[in-house]
Length: 254
Length: 269
Image 1 (cartoon, each protein chain N blue to C red):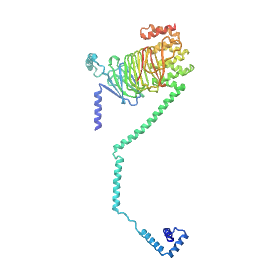
Image 2 (cartoon, one colour):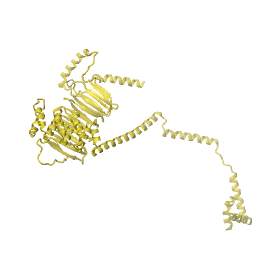
Image 3 (cartoon, rainbow over the protein chains, first blue to last red):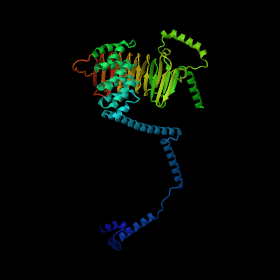
Image 4 (cartoon, chains in turn green, blue):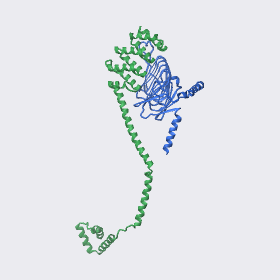
């Protein structure tokens, strides 16, 4: 029983990591017990053998074989993952470039979209400058958007009214002129607007605009329009359907 | 070596195609302004060039005799033309004999027909799908187009306007010509306006189109959409103006259809 406990402490004793008390206990026991002494000697001998044993080195042949096999293995792996063909490499760059381009263009598009919505919002808020700028836009549809949004202003905004009259007189697109005439109806209490509508009736070549103006002028009871309307009715080149509109609307001005 | 073959092939294609087709690269062009008072047919394609050709589709038997005469005249005139070039009061022909003037200003390309209407039997153009178009068919021309996704402005006097599979924004106007527009979907960016003085207007919209619709005519409106009917307030206008204002699918972009006297047909797609 005692021997077993002592023997358990042998390893630590040999490593001299036992406390001083425990170490002297072991030595005391060793002197009295030959069995344990023998056990310790055996253990010492075993450890000595372990220490004296040199580490066996693999032959250089093996090392060479291993290195070669590894190189082959690496080469095989590399062939699979990274194409050595330079043409394909070029394609890869192209793909990367395309991806970058896609991201950038998506970003720019988003930015532009945001810009458009911002303009649309500002127009809804009634930002005068935005409307005036948009009235000069290259796109007819955008100019029409501006003309319609000009409805929200009051008759005191002479700049807006002036810009609308400009559209009525000079816009190349018939639909923009039509929209301008229609919006100007809202400001028809202004003399400037009435003058412009009469002048436009005398000069506009488009029959659609002519008909719109005939209807507007009779609606606002503009008696000064009587003379140009009667003249149009007399003119031979006035199309029959425009004359029909004149005949329909003239009586309301008399 | 390969490149040289390609070049030779390219040059020979141009030489052989010269009489029938004219091509123009559209790099940096966002908008095309086209003016011609003949029958104009526009087709959309996934290309980045303009292809211009004479339209031979309607050279029916009726025209055959006349055409032959025409050709004989041409043959006879060929010798007389030798060493001379055609000049036009409207500008310089830079389309190798097609009689068009093509001028690029910034991102806008102006394609102007220099020949009068009676010298043409219609033209056909193939253009990029998403290009913005401004087409003026003059006094006698008509417009037919299909598949464009950009903004389109079209105007004619007596000719028809026919658009298929477009998205808008559209600004179409005619005095007496028929208008027939079939939308694939409706762009919400800016208003769509379609107007005519006397003729009928036929518009087809996808059922789920979001729009603030306004229809005005003294003719009759036919539709299979559910529109809010105008409520009578006091006496009707003497001129009999009819104004239908209605939201489609809770509202969206403004669509304004106006014919002074013609009927309006609004269909679901």
